[in-house]
Image (cartoon, rainbow, N blue to C red):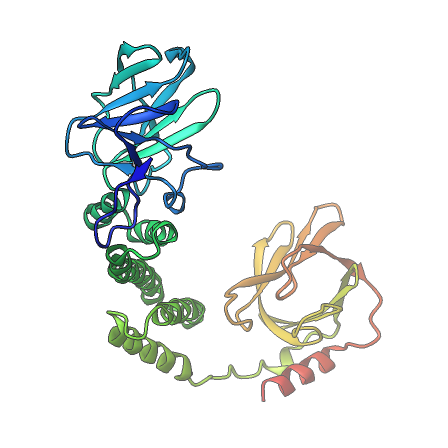
Length: 382
């Protein structure tokens, strides 16, 4: 069989031709010329990177599929039309032919549903066969020029198509076009995320909450700026970054609360223990000085000043709350509830500890006195 030369710049190959049927097989007939349909060595799923070995037949004129096989049975053969598609390119549509037997072992098939730009796929008991209806590389160029698919998906398919047709100048040039579109698409999505996080940051009134959200905004802006040397919103991104950094560095002056009146200090401490933790507390007027020990964090051994909040006068239950732990306003660190029969339940949420620690009254206290708690608290707050 002879092979018709391809046109200049064409990288998909025209199928081998013959003026007459000489070997058994599948053919497409155009103007009394037979184009051989070769086996299609595809493995697993279809992909644009698997088109390089697939040949094509001219599709500008009427054509027929010719089956030249002894004892051929249509019911043992399946025909499919497969579009070259960006998003759904694995989809195949089974097509039914109009069949006419024209000679012994020779059948002519017409497929009204088969169109230019598609692949004809044939499957029988022996093999899988395929051929392009029209130039495959030209079809890809037209597809990449007209598709409305997402840019990242188009770019991925262009890269695969270049594995099939590495020397196709048109496909290579379209790669650059879609790289720019993919970048625009990606930077647009990331900038939208920046705006969403910025809105959350600006909606907060408390400094502690804004500080937490500020880092989220800065992280997203850093990612946005890393996508390209000069992204569309670069100037605005840098302005937002400067404003947030200025906010972070502009630390408000800390106004220390005056020390409580030492004359109000109770005579005795109360001690509670649970697990490895110990809590020592002493009342001083409406406040309570509390020290947790045995807690693995920066508040271990630190004396904190709390407000005592009575929950139930009848049972004597109360909570103590502190705002000294920044970011945890009104953190309940200890609760007590009298059961009305002389007993009670105690539990604590030590600073920066999420798990509840049950605590019980304890007489084991050799280290803390009311004055020691007061002096330690005073040293911490000078």
